[in-house]
Image (cartoon, rainbow, N blue to C red; front, side):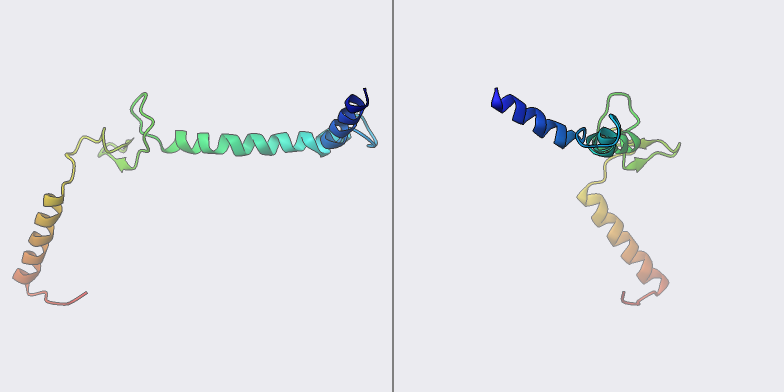
Length: 108
């Protein structure tokens, strides 16, 4: 039974319940205080996910896009059409044509 006694002593030291002025002081000063920190570290990602996820019920995607009504949605649930590569090129060419039409030839 020597290993059980040494394990109990190790557990008492690790949890902070041995050689302390009161029965609960060592626990809350040591291991018990760490429980609150561990709980905060485990719950923080869940809180952030809940804050920034898509507002559609059951969707776990990050809601990066805002609708006209102010709802945060993911790209899949956003009501506007998806932006394609051709749309970007067309918008770029239209902006360049507008600059040339207005005589704005500055380089940026």
